[in-house]
Length: 202
Image (cartoon, rainbow, N blue to C red; front, side, top):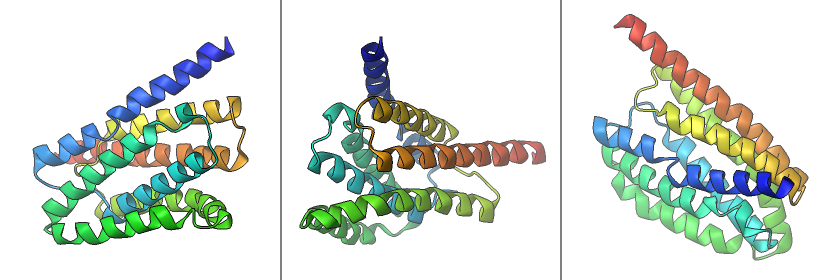
């Protein structure tokens, strides 16, 4: 029974993550605008994903517990390029790419570096959600922010709480997913609130 639950949680998370950012990417393409999306939030999220993936690989955790991260990273890169394109700042992309590649190799240069990075990873990921919330509060408009993408993010965090409890039991990883579940839910609620408020004004 536990094995079936674990398999369902792992595979459903992977399937959802394969399309997690697609609604957001399509929304940006359709509107030809990145209004409501925070570049700072996306860069922080990407940093958190890279650190978390490297940590899981470094300590040789079961691949099924982190297979979605390469997919999420690829989708974040595509979304970031879209935002840079529509904001007219595409020239910044190579600089950020270089920083991420160098950081990927440096964080495992010493064991203490990857451990510190993982401890900071939760704060970095939380900061990415808070940056998106700040952007929404400032504009009071959900713009092209996809509620479906944030809803799927809530689901994947909940399933990762379950899989962490059933496999590694890593406290740091567990805390990360609990915090992200709360913050993703907050962003989702804020997006839905401003979308409803926008419809009322129309």
